[in-house]
Length: 132
Image (cartoon, rainbow, N blue to C red):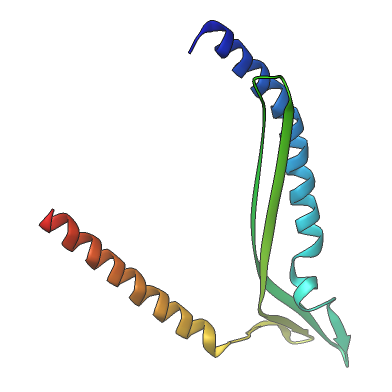
């Protein structure tokens, strides 16, 4: 890389860093607003001296990037998504609090199928390495 290219790269990286960081933060904030236990269940509910508090698992993935072209044009972009699924609820009574899981039959089956598929892929990779 020439000195001019190195300098251009460093300038682009410096300029993009501030924009990308702010963009990344906005994307994460928006995803967080729309995902979570409330998106799956709603608000906690209280009836007859029993409070039910929803519990959910939330997985967030985000990405952001930016840069400057050789013509000094800058650009940036970001995206993300979230997966929220119910895990159960906490039931609060005068006697105490208990977690009540919500079991969904397809979750266990999916895990078994995924594990079997991973084992098959691993076995195929090992066979290829041994033969190769």
